[in-house]
Image 1 (cartoon, rainbow, N blue to C red):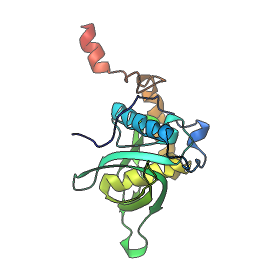
Image 2 (tube, one colour):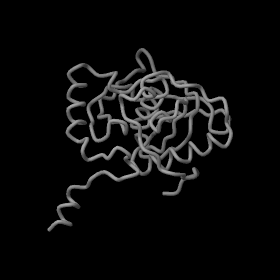
Image 3 (cartoon, rainbow, N blue to C red):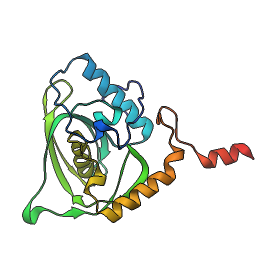
Image 4 (cartoon, helix red, strand yellow):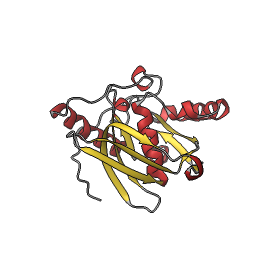
Length: 199
């Protein structure tokens, strides 16, 4: 399916534990060519990693910006860029939690359940400095929350109980050899394909 966003160069994905992933990122104040290049590279990187969202700190850049190309609960694909995001979540009787599985490209391959509100609104500005606002349901709502968290230096593991976090890290460690240090520039190891090639 075509996209309105240009694709740039694939960059390596920054992993959990790197400093830029765990502190409040800098607000975007310059909407010039460097930001346009970053956004294009982020879309290329997200595509290569088969993700639905990506924050700038996930490619090592200390800026409050994320991109997304993600379906909502009705399967409608929504894509966009949000700089300096502000998240709005339902409260009181309108707040319903979705206990779905969640993963992160910066801890590749591992998933666990993470309860989040099933509706989310995010506002900010786009890569040109124009105001934007989106409302998401289903996976899109989760994406907005996950990516806004990244701009604040929060990874979804921070939202888990110790037991679930331990399980998530154990799964990630087991899968780590499948993901080269510069992934997704170098694709993940496909064991099925290797076995086919070896026979």
